[in-house]
Image 1 (tube, rainbow, N blue to C red):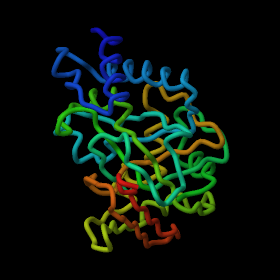
Image 2 (cartoon, rainbow, N blue to C red):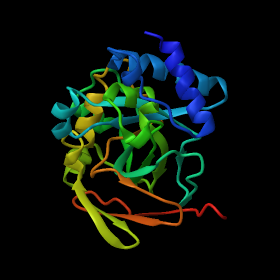
Image 3 (cartoon, rainbow, N blue to C red):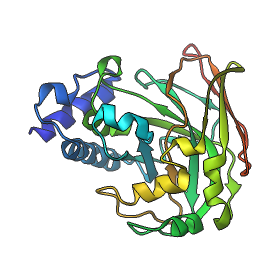
Image 4 (tube, rainbow, N blue to C red):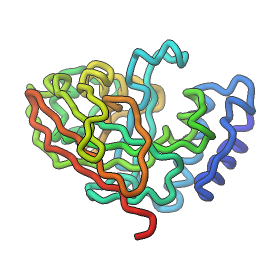
Length: 262
């Protein structure tokens, strides 16, 4: 398997904001392990250029799609200081075929080791927030396999984080009961709940800490725990809003995407 060649192709697509054929369509047997190997090379390329890792994202967290995609677990990818923001106006410049995903984002106040228990995860959470992950895809028409998605930085583009809310250890499990309503231009386009991502954000983190290559989480890490609805296409000039209800208060999140002519 030409891992370095696949990485070079994706790196070039990133730099040109263009498209490349999925590795699985060019290399027979391209596996999840191969996808992670490509992702490590591209991650190192970013670190070498000055990007600073700040946390991780989870993807494919809805178990109902695992059978059709040939999966038995979610996947993960790094996030960076350069891709995480609390700004409410976000540029889509440079992102390829971007889509929006409403998520629950967690910040950690204590270290977590691989294989940590649900109780340990709950105790380590410092804050929770509503979030929008803006995902992108460097493959034509979003046509890809899970290994292709992993290779393409886990499809991560930008994470928009809402206002942080302190979270008591006893309240971690209640995040699964949070209901979300996604609006575009104040029109409801999707609904979901915290439980739609692997049963809840705490459960999602326990999955993350069992995945290959994850060496734990350090205090200060940010993790976005997976989309709570289907991902939806977005365009410059649009305004989106995420409302939440439930036993844990998460502040409303509003984001607008800057027009290209600004």
